[in-house]
Length: 117
Image (tube, rainbow, N blue to C red; front, top):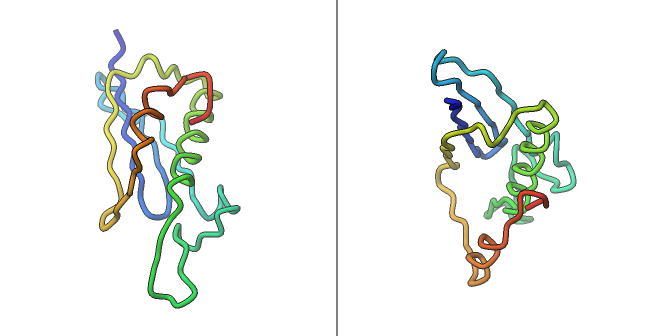
């Protein structure tokens, strides 16, 4: 049995993964996807898009999904066996709201590990 735990931190500026070996109590892998640098096509500044009137700041949720896909792809290339992870913990940015429509639950039910999210 493997005692690996994955922590995912979705902050305003980046998505970071920490892989922890429970037995050694060590972080054995860490990688961040910086939205500005790694996903420039979303045209964010410090991870956000600012409205023309400077009154509204938002982020495209698809950017977070793409960052997660990229992160897991990198982990796979590093030969990290995702099936050896016992638990995943996530934290999200503060002061954020994500609105989901009625199609969200069905999308989750049809996810495939062989396809991008």
